[in-house]
Structure formats: C-alpha cells, structure tokens
Length: 130
Image 1 (cartoon, rainbow, N blue to C red):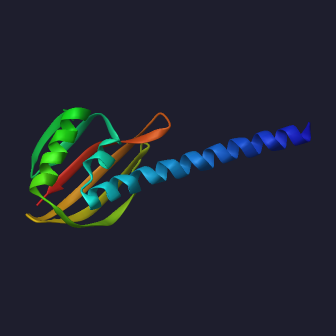
Image 2 (cartoon, rainbow, N blue to C red):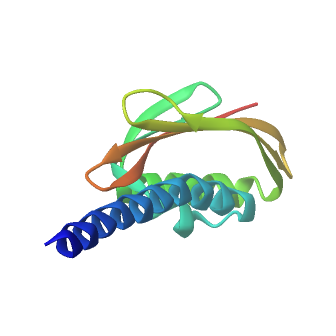
Image 3 (spheres, one colour):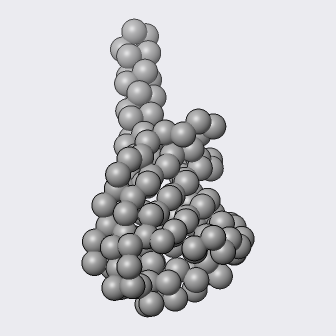
C-alpha cells in the first residue's frame, strides 16, 4: 500500500512539474516568434480575442483577425532584433514580458500579456509603441 501511495504522489508531482515547464515555455515561444518575425509561432498562443495596440491604436481582434494584423505589422516592420528587458508572473495567473523590437522602420517597445486558461497560457494582449 505504501508503494502505491508513493507512486501516486510521484505521478502527481511529475504532472505538476511538466505543466509548469510547459507554461514557462509559452512566454519564451511567443518572444522567440517575435524575435524571428514568425507570426504563426505567435498566433498559436492567441486567445479567442486578442487586444493589439500599435502606436496608441488599440483594437480587439478575433484570432484570425489578429493573425492578419500581426502579419501586416511584420511585413511593414521587418525584425532586426528583439530583446526582452523584463518579464515574469503578473498576478491573477498571468505572465508578462516587456522588450525592445528593432525593425526596418524603427524601434518599438513591446508589451505582452499571457493569461492562464485551463492548463496552458494564451496571449491576451500585445502592444507595439514607438
């Protein structure tokens, strides 16, 4: 019986560790997608609706619309470099990252917010400000 409990506890702990690692990976995958200008890599983390702000023009988009907006942004602003300045947990099961995006059309400050939804994190908001 002790062996059964021990195995059960180990299984549960392993599940939590794997889930935590996957959730930590979401923010890194999004920032890597931005770094490479890969909208598809970023879009796979979009929530059902995404708030996108580009130079103080804020709108709420569906997943499909948000992907089009992001493709257009990266077509006009080819990425040269993206550096994350800070990031981490941000209350209420959210994570954030702030970075600097150097493009062919100038430098943008980027702000990302991912929120926990079920067993994963989804991208809820992204801002690009010159």
